[in-house]
Figure: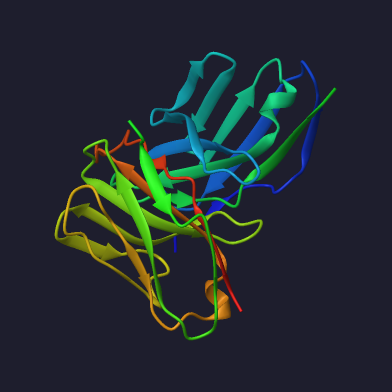
Length: 110
Length: 114
């Protein structure tokens, strides 16, 4: 059974700080990794995806992938109150079916 | 573009009743998916489809059925509703580009079975 693990949080960071969200996965065959943001009562929306080892940056967001350690993270720089949400990590083994983690709740405090 | 639409937004069912959750997309996506999300949990795949006439089971298919007669529509049928099916149901669609395939989600249907 493929598993994706996330700390449920809440992770609290002050406004302007860097938020670091982590995710581990069990299937070494996993090939692509996605980060979704979900506001309370809303549907998930894609932030970014990564499939190569290393870092991928998109604005204030950076995804980091380490396949040897089976670890993927999301860094949010200059955190804003509007970033307060649940962040879902999802992985796929090269096909299109995603396996989701349970999500990490992020709270950005003023 | 409306994207992915779902109806109804909310529904209360009695145990043993049946209903169909509707999902439609106007992005000409080949792939469509149904997920359920229980409180504090991630999304679990119920069924998916790679094109009209082709469907397959996901992780939690028991108690559900699907059909895909057109590219646009992917309804989810609940037969003999049970309290364990109380959840939020999300429909999603994607192009089907392996490796970098972005799934776009509908607004969800909140279902309560009493």
